[in-house]
Length: 485
Image (tube, rainbow, N blue to C red; front, side):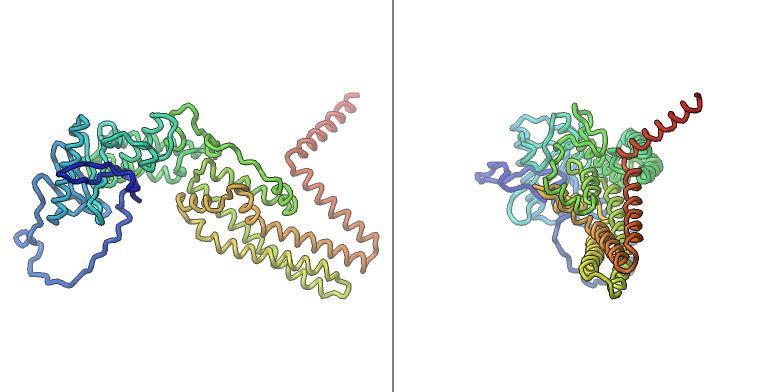
Protein backbone atom coordinates (compact mmCIF):
# COMPACT_ATOMS: atom_id res chain seq x y z
CA UNK A 1 0.00 0.00 0.00
CA UNK A 2 1.39 3.44 -0.86
CA UNK A 3 0.27 6.94 -0.07
CA UNK A 4 -1.83 8.97 -2.47
CA UNK A 5 0.21 10.90 -4.99
CA UNK A 6 -1.73 14.04 -4.03
CA UNK A 7 0.46 14.06 -0.92
CA UNK A 8 3.68 14.57 -2.85
CA UNK A 9 5.98 17.43 -1.96
CA UNK A 10 7.09 19.38 -5.01
CA UNK A 11 10.83 19.83 -5.16
CA UNK A 12 12.60 22.03 -7.69
CA UNK A 13 15.86 20.65 -8.99
CA UNK A 14 17.75 21.26 -12.26
CA UNK A 15 14.99 23.49 -13.62
CA UNK A 16 12.43 20.72 -13.43
CA UNK A 17 9.83 19.74 -10.92
CA UNK A 18 10.56 16.46 -9.20
CA UNK A 19 8.17 14.58 -7.01
CA UNK A 20 9.06 13.49 -3.53
CA UNK A 21 6.44 11.88 -1.35
CA UNK A 22 6.53 10.86 2.31
CA UNK A 23 5.80 7.28 3.21
CA UNK A 24 6.09 5.02 6.25
CA UNK A 25 7.71 1.65 6.89
CA UNK A 26 4.24 0.09 6.92
CA UNK A 27 3.25 1.62 3.55
CA UNK A 28 6.09 0.43 1.35
CA UNK A 29 5.56 -2.07 -1.46
CA UNK A 30 7.91 -4.67 0.06
CA UNK A 31 5.26 -7.41 0.18
CA UNK A 32 3.22 -6.17 -2.77
CA UNK A 33 5.76 -6.43 -5.58
CA UNK A 34 4.63 -8.10 -8.79
CA UNK A 35 8.00 -8.52 -10.53
CA UNK A 36 8.64 -11.91 -12.13
CA UNK A 37 11.79 -13.70 -13.19
CA UNK A 38 12.46 -16.29 -15.90
CA UNK A 39 15.00 -18.95 -14.83
CA UNK A 40 17.13 -20.55 -17.55
CA UNK A 41 19.64 -23.41 -17.73
CA UNK A 42 23.34 -22.63 -17.42
CA UNK A 43 26.70 -24.37 -17.48
CA UNK A 44 28.33 -25.42 -14.19
CA UNK A 45 32.06 -25.08 -14.70
CA UNK A 46 34.47 -27.38 -12.81
CA UNK A 47 35.34 -25.97 -9.39
CA UNK A 48 32.65 -23.30 -9.48
CA UNK A 49 32.51 -21.37 -6.18
CA UNK A 50 35.90 -22.67 -5.08
CA UNK A 51 38.19 -20.01 -3.65
CA UNK A 52 40.07 -19.49 -6.90
CA UNK A 53 37.01 -20.01 -9.10
CA UNK A 54 34.59 -17.41 -7.73
CA UNK A 55 32.18 -15.96 -10.33
CA UNK A 56 32.87 -12.47 -11.52
CA UNK A 57 31.65 -10.11 -8.78
CA UNK A 58 29.02 -7.48 -9.36
CA UNK A 59 30.30 -4.03 -8.43
CA UNK A 60 28.51 -1.41 -6.36
CA UNK A 61 29.11 2.36 -6.22
CA UNK A 62 31.58 3.69 -3.68
CA UNK A 63 30.41 3.52 -0.01
CA UNK A 64 27.54 1.17 -0.90
CA UNK A 65 27.26 -2.41 0.37
CA UNK A 66 24.72 -5.20 -0.12
CA UNK A 67 22.98 -7.13 2.65
CA UNK A 68 20.43 -9.94 2.63
CA UNK A 69 17.43 -10.04 4.95
CA UNK A 70 16.75 -13.40 6.72
CA UNK A 71 13.67 -13.75 4.52
CA UNK A 72 15.89 -13.48 1.43
CA UNK A 73 15.25 -9.90 0.29
CA UNK A 74 18.44 -8.07 -0.72
CA UNK A 75 18.91 -4.43 0.26
CA UNK A 76 21.68 -1.86 -0.03
CA UNK A 77 23.29 0.57 2.43
CA UNK A 78 25.32 3.71 1.81
CA UNK A 79 27.72 4.19 4.71
CA UNK A 80 28.15 7.96 4.86
CA UNK A 81 27.22 10.96 6.99
CA UNK A 82 23.58 10.37 6.07
CA UNK A 83 23.20 6.60 5.97
CA UNK A 84 20.84 5.57 3.15
CA UNK A 85 19.00 2.27 2.80
CA UNK A 86 17.07 1.09 -0.24
CA UNK A 87 15.75 -2.10 -1.82
CA UNK A 88 16.33 -0.75 -5.34
CA UNK A 89 18.81 -2.93 -7.21
CA UNK A 90 22.04 -0.91 -7.36
CA UNK A 91 23.70 -3.38 -9.72
CA UNK A 92 21.91 -1.52 -12.52
CA UNK A 93 23.46 1.74 -13.67
CA UNK A 94 20.18 3.55 -14.27
CA UNK A 95 19.02 2.73 -10.72
CA UNK A 96 22.31 4.04 -9.30
CA UNK A 97 21.83 7.32 -11.15
CA UNK A 98 18.28 7.76 -9.88
CA UNK A 99 19.23 6.90 -6.29
CA UNK A 100 22.15 9.33 -6.42
CA UNK A 101 19.95 12.11 -7.78
CA UNK A 102 17.19 11.60 -5.21
CA UNK A 103 19.61 11.29 -2.29
CA UNK A 104 21.15 14.63 -3.34
CA UNK A 105 17.70 16.27 -3.51
CA UNK A 106 16.79 15.04 -0.04
CA UNK A 107 20.14 16.08 1.43
CA UNK A 108 19.65 19.57 -0.03
CA UNK A 109 16.17 19.75 1.51
CA UNK A 110 17.52 18.71 4.90
CA UNK A 111 20.10 21.46 4.66
CA UNK A 112 17.47 24.03 3.63
CA UNK A 113 15.21 23.04 6.54
CA UNK A 114 18.25 23.22 8.87
CA UNK A 115 17.62 19.73 10.17
CA UNK A 116 20.66 18.44 12.02
CA UNK A 117 21.40 14.86 10.98
CA UNK A 118 23.40 12.70 13.37
CA UNK A 119 25.08 9.34 12.80
CA UNK A 120 21.99 7.69 14.32
CA UNK A 121 19.73 8.78 11.44
CA UNK A 122 18.89 6.63 8.41
CA UNK A 123 17.15 7.63 5.20
CA UNK A 124 14.98 5.12 3.37
CA UNK A 125 14.42 5.65 -0.37
CA UNK A 126 11.96 3.78 -2.57
CA UNK A 127 11.85 4.43 -6.30
CA UNK A 128 8.64 4.28 -8.26
CA UNK A 129 8.87 1.99 -11.27
CA UNK A 130 6.24 3.79 -13.37
CA UNK A 131 7.14 7.46 -13.02
CA UNK A 132 10.16 9.43 -11.91
CA UNK A 133 9.25 9.89 -8.28
CA UNK A 134 10.57 8.79 -4.93
CA UNK A 135 9.11 7.84 -1.55
CA UNK A 136 11.11 8.38 1.62
CA UNK A 137 11.17 8.45 5.39
CA UNK A 138 13.86 8.95 8.02
CA UNK A 139 14.41 7.05 11.25
CA UNK A 140 16.36 7.98 14.36
CA UNK A 141 17.97 5.06 16.20
CA UNK A 142 18.62 7.19 19.29
CA UNK A 143 14.96 8.15 19.84
CA UNK A 144 13.53 5.04 18.13
CA UNK A 145 11.11 7.05 16.02
CA UNK A 146 10.36 7.79 12.38
CA UNK A 147 10.21 11.34 10.98
CA UNK A 148 10.02 13.37 7.75
CA UNK A 149 11.42 16.57 6.30
CA UNK A 150 8.25 18.67 6.56
CA UNK A 151 5.43 18.72 9.14
CA UNK A 152 2.80 16.18 8.11
CA UNK A 153 -0.65 15.26 9.41
CA UNK A 154 -1.25 11.70 10.54
CA UNK A 155 -4.09 11.28 8.04
CA UNK A 156 -1.73 12.19 5.17
CA UNK A 157 0.54 9.34 6.31
CA UNK A 158 -2.36 6.90 6.72
CA UNK A 159 -1.70 6.78 10.46
CA UNK A 160 -4.50 6.47 13.05
CA UNK A 161 -5.81 9.41 15.03
CA UNK A 162 -4.16 10.10 18.39
CA UNK A 163 -5.12 11.71 21.69
CA UNK A 164 -1.74 13.20 22.63
CA UNK A 165 1.87 13.55 21.56
CA UNK A 166 2.92 10.71 23.85
CA UNK A 167 0.21 8.57 22.26
CA UNK A 168 1.63 9.42 18.82
CA UNK A 169 5.06 8.27 19.96
CA UNK A 170 3.83 4.67 20.24
CA UNK A 171 2.86 4.50 16.57
CA UNK A 172 6.09 6.23 15.49
CA UNK A 173 8.03 3.70 17.55
CA UNK A 174 6.08 0.89 15.89
CA UNK A 175 7.14 2.28 12.50
CA UNK A 176 10.76 2.47 13.70
CA UNK A 177 10.81 -1.18 14.76
CA UNK A 178 9.11 -2.16 11.51
CA UNK A 179 12.03 -0.53 9.66
CA UNK A 180 14.60 -2.33 11.82
CA UNK A 181 12.83 -5.63 11.20
CA UNK A 182 13.08 -5.12 7.44
CA UNK A 183 16.70 -3.89 7.46
CA UNK A 184 18.41 -5.67 10.37
CA UNK A 185 21.73 -6.85 8.96
CA UNK A 186 23.94 -3.76 8.70
CA UNK A 187 24.13 -1.80 11.95
CA UNK A 188 25.68 -4.31 14.34
CA UNK A 189 22.72 -5.57 16.37
CA UNK A 190 20.72 -4.24 19.30
CA UNK A 191 21.74 -3.49 22.88
CA UNK A 192 21.10 -6.29 25.38
CA UNK A 193 18.68 -3.99 27.19
CA UNK A 194 16.28 -4.23 24.25
CA UNK A 195 16.00 -7.98 24.82
CA UNK A 196 15.87 -7.67 28.63
CA UNK A 197 12.99 -5.19 28.40
CA UNK A 198 11.11 -7.54 26.09
CA UNK A 199 11.64 -10.43 28.51
CA UNK A 200 10.11 -8.33 31.30
CA UNK A 201 7.18 -7.27 29.09
CA UNK A 202 6.37 -10.81 27.95
CA UNK A 203 6.78 -12.18 31.49
CA UNK A 204 4.18 -9.70 32.74
CA UNK A 205 1.99 -10.42 29.73
CA UNK A 206 2.12 -14.14 30.43
CA UNK A 207 1.21 -13.63 34.10
CA UNK A 208 -1.59 -11.25 33.12
CA UNK A 209 -3.02 -13.77 30.69
CA UNK A 210 -2.82 -16.57 33.28
CA UNK A 211 -4.60 -14.54 35.96
CA UNK A 212 -7.13 -12.55 33.91
CA UNK A 213 -9.68 -13.58 31.31
CA UNK A 214 -9.85 -10.03 29.92
CA UNK A 215 -6.14 -9.23 29.65
CA UNK A 216 -5.25 -6.68 26.96
CA UNK A 217 -1.94 -8.34 26.10
CA UNK A 218 -2.02 -9.49 22.49
CA UNK A 219 -0.50 -12.96 22.95
CA UNK A 220 -1.80 -15.95 24.90
CA UNK A 221 0.06 -17.36 27.91
CA UNK A 222 1.32 -20.29 25.82
CA UNK A 223 2.61 -17.97 23.09
CA UNK A 224 4.31 -15.77 25.69
CA UNK A 225 6.11 -18.82 27.09
CA UNK A 226 7.43 -19.68 23.62
CA UNK A 227 8.60 -16.13 23.00
CA UNK A 228 10.30 -15.99 26.41
CA UNK A 229 12.26 -19.16 25.64
CA UNK A 230 13.25 -17.70 22.28
CA UNK A 231 14.37 -14.38 23.79
CA UNK A 232 16.36 -15.96 26.62
CA UNK A 233 18.13 -18.37 24.26
CA UNK A 234 19.02 -15.62 21.79
CA UNK A 235 20.27 -13.08 24.33
CA UNK A 236 23.86 -14.25 23.90
CA UNK A 237 23.61 -13.73 20.12
CA UNK A 238 22.15 -10.23 20.15
CA UNK A 239 24.65 -8.89 17.58
CA UNK A 240 23.35 -11.31 14.94
CA UNK A 241 21.16 -9.64 12.33
CA UNK A 242 18.66 -12.51 12.37
CA UNK A 243 18.17 -12.02 16.11
CA UNK A 244 17.75 -8.30 15.50
CA UNK A 245 15.02 -9.08 12.96
CA UNK A 246 12.70 -11.04 15.24
CA UNK A 247 13.41 -8.87 18.31
CA UNK A 248 12.38 -5.82 16.26
CA UNK A 249 9.22 -7.61 15.12
CA UNK A 250 8.24 -8.32 18.73
CA UNK A 251 8.95 -4.73 19.73
CA UNK A 252 6.75 -3.58 16.85
CA UNK A 253 3.82 -5.64 18.17
CA UNK A 254 4.39 -4.31 21.70
CA UNK A 255 4.37 -0.71 20.45
CA UNK A 256 1.20 -1.41 18.44
CA UNK A 257 -0.50 -2.92 21.48
CA UNK A 258 0.48 0.05 23.63
CA UNK A 259 -1.01 2.38 21.05
CA UNK A 260 -4.34 0.54 20.92
CA UNK A 261 -4.61 0.29 24.74
CA UNK A 262 -3.64 3.98 25.12
CA UNK A 263 -0.71 2.99 27.32
CA UNK A 264 0.28 5.83 29.67
CA UNK A 265 -2.64 8.08 28.66
CA UNK A 266 -5.27 9.70 30.86
CA UNK A 267 -7.87 7.16 29.73
CA UNK A 268 -6.39 3.67 29.32
CA UNK A 269 -7.98 0.39 28.27
CA UNK A 270 -7.38 -1.89 31.26
CA UNK A 271 -9.48 -4.85 30.14
CA UNK A 272 -10.21 -6.39 26.76
CA UNK A 273 -13.97 -5.80 27.04
CA UNK A 274 -13.60 -2.13 28.04
CA UNK A 275 -14.59 0.38 25.36
CA UNK A 276 -12.86 3.77 25.52
CA UNK A 277 -13.60 5.04 22.00
CA UNK A 278 -17.15 4.04 21.08
CA UNK A 279 -20.22 4.32 23.34
CA UNK A 280 -22.29 1.13 23.81
CA UNK A 281 -24.62 0.49 20.87
CA UNK A 282 -28.35 0.88 21.36
CA UNK A 283 -30.42 -2.16 20.52
CA UNK A 284 -33.14 -1.69 17.93
CA UNK A 285 -36.72 -2.28 19.09
CA UNK A 286 -36.96 -5.27 16.78
CA UNK A 287 -34.16 -7.00 18.68
CA UNK A 288 -36.34 -7.68 21.73
CA UNK A 289 -39.09 -9.10 19.53
CA UNK A 290 -36.83 -11.36 17.46
CA UNK A 291 -34.96 -12.48 20.56
CA UNK A 292 -38.18 -13.70 22.17
CA UNK A 293 -39.28 -15.36 18.96
CA UNK A 294 -35.86 -17.08 18.71
CA UNK A 295 -36.03 -18.31 22.33
CA UNK A 296 -33.45 -15.76 23.54
CA UNK A 297 -30.58 -17.41 21.64
CA UNK A 298 -29.55 -14.25 19.65
CA UNK A 299 -28.86 -12.35 22.89
CA UNK A 300 -26.11 -14.80 23.78
CA UNK A 301 -24.37 -14.37 20.44
CA UNK A 302 -24.79 -10.59 20.47
CA UNK A 303 -23.15 -10.38 23.90
CA UNK A 304 -20.20 -12.45 22.64
CA UNK A 305 -19.81 -10.29 19.52
CA UNK A 306 -19.79 -7.11 21.59
CA UNK A 307 -17.07 -8.44 23.91
CA UNK A 308 -15.09 -9.84 20.98
CA UNK A 309 -14.86 -6.62 18.93
CA UNK A 310 -14.50 -3.79 21.43
CA UNK A 311 -13.39 -0.54 19.75
CA UNK A 312 -12.82 -2.56 16.55
CA UNK A 313 -10.08 -4.62 18.20
CA UNK A 314 -10.01 -8.41 18.09
CA UNK A 315 -7.58 -10.83 19.73
CA UNK A 316 -6.61 -13.87 17.69
CA UNK A 317 -6.93 -16.48 20.46
CA UNK A 318 -10.30 -15.04 21.57
CA UNK A 319 -11.56 -15.12 17.98
CA UNK A 320 -10.47 -18.73 17.48
CA UNK A 321 -12.10 -19.74 20.76
CA UNK A 322 -15.34 -17.98 19.75
CA UNK A 323 -15.44 -19.60 16.32
CA UNK A 324 -14.69 -23.03 17.80
CA UNK A 325 -17.64 -22.59 20.18
CA UNK A 326 -19.88 -21.55 17.28
CA UNK A 327 -18.85 -24.53 15.16
CA UNK A 328 -19.42 -26.89 18.09
CA UNK A 329 -22.82 -25.30 18.77
CA UNK A 330 -23.94 -25.67 15.14
CA UNK A 331 -22.69 -29.25 15.03
CA UNK A 332 -24.60 -30.05 18.22
CA UNK A 333 -27.78 -28.47 16.84
CA UNK A 334 -27.35 -30.58 13.72
CA UNK A 335 -26.95 -33.77 15.77
CA UNK A 336 -30.11 -32.92 17.70
CA UNK A 337 -32.24 -31.73 14.79
CA UNK A 338 -31.66 -34.77 12.58
CA UNK A 339 -33.12 -37.44 14.95
CA UNK A 340 -35.93 -35.02 15.81
CA UNK A 341 -36.69 -34.74 12.10
CA UNK A 342 -36.85 -38.56 11.82
CA UNK A 343 -39.13 -38.69 14.88
CA UNK A 344 -41.38 -36.04 13.36
CA UNK A 345 -41.69 -38.00 10.11
CA UNK A 346 -42.49 -41.24 11.96
CA UNK A 347 -45.04 -39.47 14.17
CA UNK A 348 -46.77 -37.95 11.16
CA UNK A 349 -47.43 -41.45 9.78
CA UNK A 350 -49.86 -42.29 12.58
CA UNK A 351 -53.53 -42.02 11.53
CA UNK A 352 -54.39 -39.52 14.29
CA UNK A 353 -51.48 -37.18 13.48
CA UNK A 354 -52.06 -33.48 12.90
CA UNK A 355 -50.90 -32.34 9.44
CA UNK A 356 -50.34 -28.80 10.76
CA UNK A 357 -48.08 -29.79 13.69
CA UNK A 358 -46.28 -32.35 11.54
CA UNK A 359 -45.58 -29.89 8.74
CA UNK A 360 -44.45 -27.05 11.04
CA UNK A 361 -42.16 -29.33 13.03
CA UNK A 362 -40.77 -30.80 9.80
CA UNK A 363 -40.02 -27.33 8.42
CA UNK A 364 -38.36 -26.15 11.65
CA UNK A 365 -36.10 -29.22 11.87
CA UNK A 366 -35.18 -29.07 8.19
CA UNK A 367 -34.39 -25.34 8.42
CA UNK A 368 -32.26 -26.01 11.51
CA UNK A 369 -30.25 -28.68 9.68
CA UNK A 370 -29.77 -26.58 6.54
CA UNK A 371 -28.75 -23.44 8.47
CA UNK A 372 -26.32 -25.43 10.63
CA UNK A 373 -24.67 -26.97 7.55
CA UNK A 374 -24.41 -23.63 5.73
CA UNK A 375 -23.00 -21.77 8.74
CA UNK A 376 -20.55 -24.55 9.58
CA UNK A 377 -19.28 -24.73 5.99
CA UNK A 378 -19.03 -20.94 5.69
CA UNK A 379 -17.08 -20.43 8.93
CA UNK A 380 -14.98 -23.57 9.18
CA UNK A 381 -11.87 -21.90 7.75
CA UNK A 382 -12.40 -18.73 9.80
CA UNK A 383 -11.71 -20.72 12.96
CA UNK A 384 -8.05 -20.77 11.89
CA UNK A 385 -7.78 -17.21 10.60
CA UNK A 386 -5.52 -14.47 11.94
CA UNK A 387 -6.57 -11.42 13.92
CA UNK A 388 -6.44 -9.21 10.80
CA UNK A 389 -8.69 -11.61 8.86
CA UNK A 390 -11.06 -11.81 11.82
CA UNK A 391 -11.20 -8.01 12.01
CA UNK A 392 -12.02 -7.80 8.30
CA UNK A 393 -14.80 -10.35 8.71
CA UNK A 394 -16.31 -8.62 11.76
CA UNK A 395 -16.19 -5.27 10.03
CA UNK A 396 -17.95 -6.75 6.99
CA UNK A 397 -20.82 -8.39 8.93
CA UNK A 398 -21.35 -5.46 11.28
CA UNK A 399 -24.38 -3.35 10.37
CA UNK A 400 -24.23 0.43 10.71
CA UNK A 401 -27.81 0.47 12.04
CA UNK A 402 -28.21 -2.86 13.82
CA UNK A 403 -24.58 -3.42 14.90
CA UNK A 404 -24.11 -7.21 15.42
CA UNK A 405 -27.80 -7.91 15.94
CA UNK A 406 -28.45 -9.26 12.43
CA UNK A 407 -25.44 -11.59 12.36
CA UNK A 408 -26.33 -12.73 15.89
CA UNK A 409 -29.79 -13.63 14.62
CA UNK A 410 -28.27 -15.65 11.77
CA UNK A 411 -25.83 -17.44 14.08
CA UNK A 412 -28.72 -18.44 16.38
CA UNK A 413 -30.86 -20.00 13.62
CA UNK A 414 -29.76 -23.67 14.04
CA UNK A 415 -30.42 -23.81 17.79
CA UNK A 416 -33.51 -21.58 17.76
CA UNK A 417 -35.14 -23.50 14.91
CA UNK A 418 -34.36 -26.78 16.66
CA UNK A 419 -36.06 -25.48 19.81
CA UNK A 420 -39.08 -24.50 17.74
CA UNK A 421 -39.11 -27.93 16.15
CA UNK A 422 -38.86 -29.55 19.59
CA UNK A 423 -41.70 -27.40 20.91
CA UNK A 424 -43.91 -28.20 17.95
CA UNK A 425 -43.05 -31.89 18.24
CA UNK A 426 -44.03 -31.80 21.93
CA UNK A 427 -47.32 -30.10 21.08
CA UNK A 428 -47.93 -32.75 18.46
CA UNK A 429 -47.35 -35.49 21.04
CA UNK A 430 -49.79 -33.82 23.44
CA UNK A 431 -52.30 -33.48 20.61
CA UNK A 432 -52.04 -37.21 19.89
CA UNK A 433 -52.35 -38.00 23.60
CA UNK A 434 -55.60 -36.02 23.73
CA UNK A 435 -56.97 -37.96 20.79
CA UNK A 436 -55.66 -41.44 21.56
CA UNK A 437 -55.45 -41.48 25.37
CA UNK A 438 -57.58 -40.00 28.12
CA UNK A 439 -57.85 -36.25 28.48
CA UNK A 440 -56.77 -36.45 32.11
CA UNK A 441 -53.53 -38.22 31.22
CA UNK A 442 -52.75 -35.71 28.48
CA UNK A 443 -53.38 -32.76 30.81
CA UNK A 444 -51.25 -34.38 33.48
CA UNK A 445 -48.39 -34.89 31.05
CA UNK A 446 -48.67 -31.30 29.88
CA UNK A 447 -48.63 -29.96 33.44
CA UNK A 448 -45.59 -32.13 34.22
CA UNK A 449 -43.64 -30.87 31.18
CA UNK A 450 -44.53 -27.23 31.87
CA UNK A 451 -43.66 -27.62 35.54
CA UNK A 452 -40.30 -29.15 34.69
CA UNK A 453 -39.52 -26.34 32.25
CA UNK A 454 -40.53 -23.58 34.69
CA UNK A 455 -38.55 -25.17 37.53
CA UNK A 456 -35.37 -25.34 35.46
CA UNK A 457 -35.80 -21.75 34.31
CA UNK A 458 -36.52 -20.55 37.85
CA UNK A 459 -33.62 -22.33 39.52
CA UNK A 460 -30.98 -21.55 36.85
CA UNK A 461 -31.99 -17.91 36.33
CA UNK A 462 -29.61 -15.50 38.06
CA UNK A 463 -32.27 -13.20 39.47
CA UNK A 464 -34.78 -15.89 40.32
CA UNK A 465 -32.20 -18.22 41.85
CA UNK A 466 -31.27 -15.41 44.21
CA UNK A 467 -34.90 -15.19 45.23
CA UNK A 468 -34.97 -18.97 45.58
CA UNK A 469 -31.89 -18.81 47.82
CA UNK A 470 -33.46 -16.10 49.96
CA UNK A 471 -36.61 -18.20 50.28
CA UNK A 472 -34.60 -21.27 51.29
CA UNK A 473 -32.61 -19.18 53.78
CA UNK A 474 -35.83 -17.83 55.31
CA UNK A 475 -37.21 -21.36 55.63
CA UNK A 476 -34.01 -22.51 57.35
CA UNK A 477 -34.16 -19.59 59.76
CA UNK A 478 -37.79 -20.45 60.50
CA UNK A 479 -36.86 -24.04 61.27
CA UNK A 480 -34.08 -22.85 63.59
CA UNK A 481 -36.46 -20.56 65.47
CA UNK A 482 -38.97 -23.38 65.92
CA UNK A 483 -36.21 -25.67 67.19
CA UNK A 484 -35.17 -23.07 69.78
CA UNK A 485 -38.73 -22.83 71.06
